[in-house]
Image (cartoon, rainbow, N blue to C red):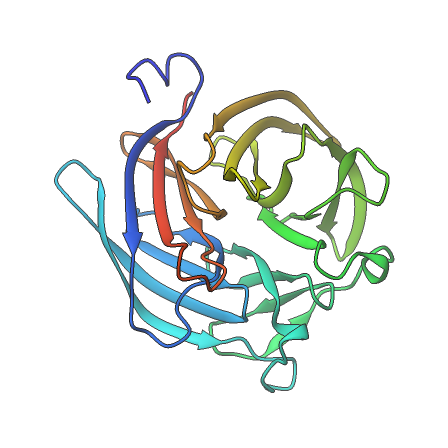
Length: 279
């Protein structure tokens, strides 16, 4: 990407790192959260495992390595292990005190954990959750600074042209707004940045062309999104299957770090890519 990318309102690629590990169960990453230092991270796999670790960077801040310090299975509300249907974890949000929120798209729900490896606790379910498609439901989860949660199904309702956003605050869910679908892109993750804006990561897939990724950015005010802008759209095959996204503040400016899901395929890769964001 050219050095004029930021001035033109587009994200600028800073680094791309292919991550390999011999840790049992490694891969299938569907969500990512970054610590404020740009080194500590939390990753979630879509097979019900949660990892914490640290990145390595060179003198220019480019990602040069990643290590997992822990990689534990998610547990149920009684401390039980999760079956594959109940372990399809997709979205992740982390509170400053370390409490975790995770959305699932097998049995559609959002659970919260006080710590990795601990028991889950329920959040109430919206009445719509029961009727969501089995493999196209609560893909994205974002947390606002005031604690409000937003979750979004991967696809619009059958016959629909917009993604329904569900908002959780003060103990209840509501449906404040939808996001129009543009082209054949589907939702993979959402985040609210330090700037208060709403970021949506999307994916398009073609058997012949492979994966393309897009990030749209919106102003978030009350019950509405506005000022939609595309800040990133990758050509097919340039990146792998990007599913996780973290927006964070570095000393030099805002950063967007993305991680790919290798789908347990030998011909895919776990890729961590990072971009500088336009003001």
